[in-house]
Image (tube, rainbow, N blue to C red; front, top):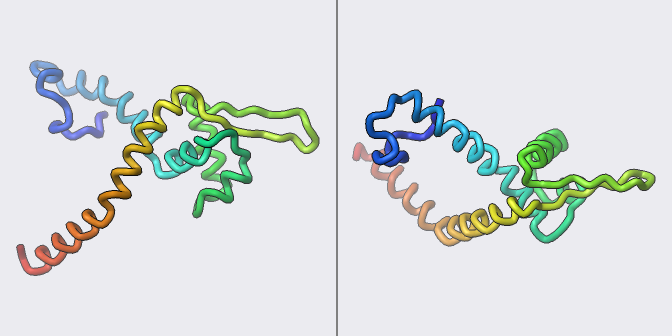
Length: 139
């Protein structure tokens, strides 16, 4: 089932097609966006951008992430082909994570999005305040 509202899907692609066809096509897109747009995924991808990172380095760098969530997110990013995991035969074993070429391409978009969010954080806060004030006065 698609999580995309109809207004986000061009009429050119949906005219005359049953809703089930649209859902079938939109589902993979939604699945990928859900994975890469998640808070922890974005933070991990940005954290690994400067080069290989070890689990403990990521754990320290990402405020609020639990060990379990870090482990799950790293596994999912590796499964999706966005990270490579390298295990070195040392005692104790050393493991690091690196971005794949596909993830580096995604990073460009993420940095653009995070830059936009940073530039407009104040505007969004002001808009929310104005909206809430209007809503509390019965709009």
